[in-house]
Length: 313
Image 1 (cartoon, rainbow, N blue to C red):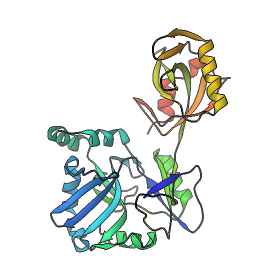
Image 2 (cartoon, rainbow, N blue to C red):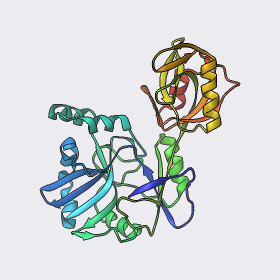
Image 3 (cartoon, rainbow, N blue to C red):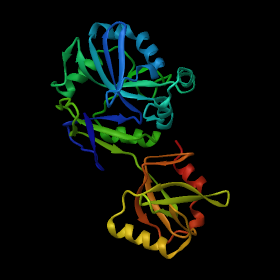
Image 4 (cartoon, rainbow, N blue to C red):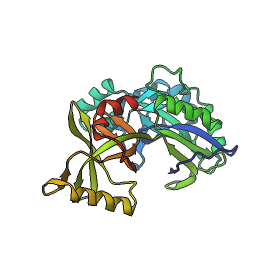
């Protein structure tokens, strides 16, 4: 079951709210004391990639054993705070293949599992039950609820549910979190469905960038920032442009091309544009989207340090 992306948070008594963690959606299938497995959203068995999580589950197993067979739904992530996870770190964990690499990453980038739903308890299918009923069952688990005072930030946790969306959103902004998920109190768990009973809203960041090139092969536009007095590439975007805006950008690049190769048309720095994005890292941005032309901006003011400072997490 997957949430639908929205730009606004539903705000009435029919909804509950929870932080959205930037990690891997993961279900835990726990059939007997020593039979526990982890599955990705596409039902790939990823148990061997997270031996640290296995260790944490076994450590708190006394709290789970009375509920077996059990299926949990949640997020596997590397927490930076109770409201923010580090996607690039969990991505490296998910891509690791060799045991040596996995063991090394377990020490350098220990993972957590945040439980936000329970699908089976004592072998009984709970998916037809309401979200509120499933929450009651989660609350019976005697494990830590993730909040601002939680330490250390690695292990097995219950998610914190909020009835006040404004309060949660303030915490998301404070911690530079990914966003929040709104869930209808009476919602059932529907397998394989993207539903409007669950609504996700992302905490978008913003920045002004310099247009530097156009990729003829994939219709993406390259952008850069000033770093150490040089314009360096920080990524590319294509989403967010309407037909007129895309045509205007292509015309601008073609009229000001200074160099061309098999893939790119290059231009001198000059045109500034505003992009939104989910997260900024030293490698660049994630999920960039065009927002507006910034004709009154000087490209020399589009600086790497300014973006890093404004979006520091």
